Length: 77
Image 1 (cartoon, rainbow, N blue to C red):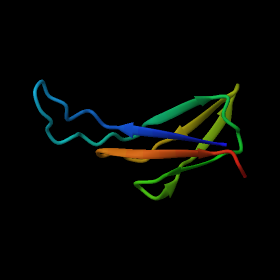
Image 2: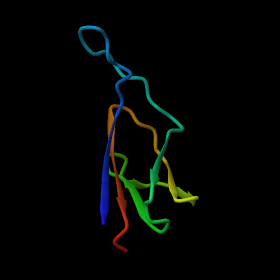
Image 3: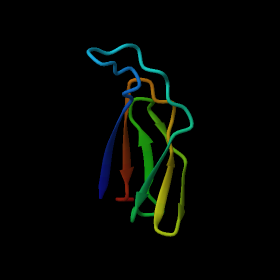
């Protein structure tokens, strides 16, 4: 009923350590076979995500990702 996706921003990865990550903007997540009526929420940003469905794919517009976010796709409603 629910799909949980952990989005980790690895832009700060260096050869032997980590620096500050660059924010990721305008990202999208595409999930095949997800319910077109699913509700999607970003937990770190505590906000709903916009979605669209086409040809069996659910396209989710992601919020700005700094270090990480957790996206929950809920088809139980």
